[in-house]
Amino acid sequence: MTTALPIGWVLRASTVGFTVGCRVLQPSVPQFGDLVKVPVSDGVSVFGLIYNVQVQDDPAVRQLILVGEMEPEAVLDQRENRLVPIEISVLIVGYQRDKQIFQGLPPQPPLSLDILILGSDADIRAFTKSFDYFRLVLNSPQIPGDEVLVTHLRRVAEVQPAETQRRFLLNAGRELARLLNFDLVRLDNILRRIRPVS
Image (cartoon, rainbow, N blue to C red; front, top):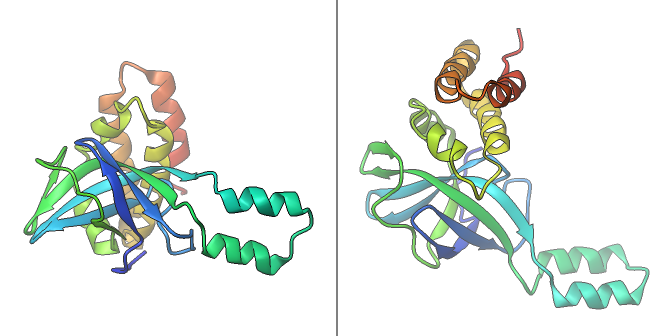
């Protein structure tokens, strides 16, 4: 999960989130629940969690469908040379100024054409030392927060050293129990899905 290559470019942004356009989805492209970042100025980066990937309607696809049977080469060419970008929607969960990480909304969102990169394993471990961002994810009505958090926590556990993976998930579960003690059905649904394997 380490890359410094641009994945896409910011199309639009607000204080709480942004949308990125990219040409084509590759295995290295961030996926649902991944932690990503956008360097916005010297020493400042905005962190976010991917909550949606949308393949917009492309006029070329409509024409290809009318042709009927398609050659594999034509399908591959269309996927690699789309007329409309694939859109990745990101919920902002924090930012970094110099070496210090803050969990919460940044003073300013990214700007159009800022680049999106996948958070490195070191970024992920540094960002998830605290769970203050959980509340942002759980209380964001525009996203499937529970699903994002479950997928995100499973991925974060994978980049932890093997001997600390279980402890990481148990600590995350404790924080979720504190935040969701009023909604035990929701809490149980999340905890069952992030439960560490014995």
